[in-house]
Amino acid sequence: LPQILENVIVKNKNIINSLNCKTAIKKANKLMGQKGRILVRKSGTEPKIRIMAESYDKNLILKCIKIIKNSIK
Image (cartoon, rainbow, N blue to C red; front, top):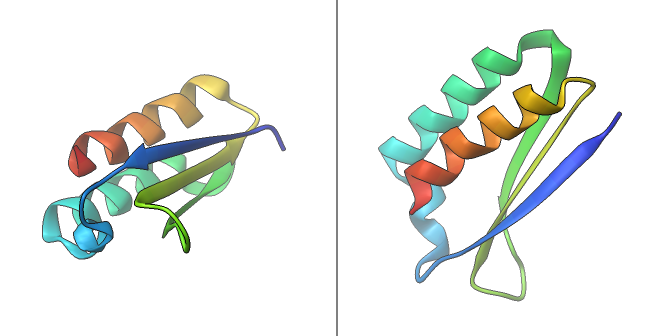
Protein backbone atom coordinates (compact mmCIF):
# COMPACT_ATOMS: atom_id res chain seq x y z
CA LEU A 1 0.00 0.00 0.00
CA PRO A 2 1.18 3.56 -0.62
CA GLN A 3 2.13 5.25 2.63
CA ILE A 4 3.01 8.70 3.89
CA LEU A 5 5.09 9.38 7.00
CA GLU A 6 4.93 12.81 8.64
CA ASN A 7 7.23 13.84 11.47
CA VAL A 8 5.92 16.58 13.76
CA ILE A 9 8.46 18.35 15.98
CA VAL A 10 7.15 18.76 19.54
CA LYS A 11 8.43 20.05 22.87
CA ASN A 12 6.78 17.23 24.81
CA LYS A 13 6.35 13.82 23.18
CA ASN A 14 3.71 12.89 25.76
CA ILE A 15 1.24 15.10 23.93
CA ILE A 16 0.02 11.97 22.16
CA ASN A 17 -1.48 10.90 25.51
CA SER A 18 -3.65 14.03 25.69
CA LEU A 19 -7.42 13.71 25.30
CA ASN A 20 -7.38 16.04 22.27
CA CYS A 21 -4.81 13.91 20.44
CA LYS A 22 -6.46 10.60 21.35
CA THR A 23 -9.79 11.91 20.07
CA ALA A 24 -8.18 13.01 16.78
CA ILE A 25 -6.54 9.59 16.33
CA LYS A 26 -9.89 7.85 16.90
CA LYS A 27 -11.57 10.19 14.42
CA ALA A 28 -8.88 9.54 11.79
CA ASN A 29 -9.07 5.76 12.34
CA LYS A 30 -12.86 5.86 11.97
CA LEU A 31 -12.52 7.87 8.76
CA MET A 32 -9.90 5.43 7.40
CA GLY A 33 -12.05 2.41 8.31
CA GLN A 34 -11.06 -0.73 6.41
CA LYS A 35 -9.40 1.26 3.60
CA GLY A 36 -5.99 1.44 5.26
CA ARG A 37 -4.22 1.95 8.57
CA ILE A 38 -2.75 4.66 10.75
CA LEU A 39 0.17 4.47 13.17
CA VAL A 40 1.04 7.30 15.57
CA ARG A 41 4.08 6.97 17.81
CA LYS A 42 6.76 8.89 19.66
CA SER A 43 10.24 8.97 18.15
CA GLY A 44 12.71 7.10 20.30
CA THR A 45 15.60 9.45 19.64
CA GLU A 46 14.19 12.83 18.59
CA PRO A 47 11.56 15.27 19.93
CA LYS A 48 9.08 14.19 17.26
CA ILE A 49 5.75 12.45 16.85
CA ARG A 50 5.67 10.18 13.82
CA ILE A 51 2.38 9.80 11.96
CA MET A 52 2.23 7.07 9.31
CA ALA A 53 -0.83 6.33 7.22
CA GLU A 54 -1.27 3.92 4.34
CA SER A 55 -4.12 3.45 1.89
CA TYR A 56 -4.75 3.32 -1.84
CA ASP A 57 -6.59 6.66 -1.47
CA LYS A 58 -3.94 9.39 -1.16
CA ASN A 59 -6.50 12.09 -0.34
CA LEU A 60 -7.78 9.98 2.55
CA ILE A 61 -4.22 9.56 3.86
CA LEU A 62 -3.60 13.31 3.74
CA LYS A 63 -6.93 14.09 5.42
CA CYS A 64 -6.27 11.65 8.27
CA ILE A 65 -2.74 12.93 8.83
CA LYS A 66 -4.01 16.52 8.89
CA ILE A 67 -6.61 15.68 11.55
CA ILE A 68 -3.91 14.22 13.81
CA LYS A 69 -1.33 16.96 13.10
CA ASN A 70 -3.83 19.67 14.02
CA SER A 71 -4.36 18.04 17.42
CA ILE A 72 -0.61 17.99 18.11
CA LYS A 73 0.29 21.55 17.14
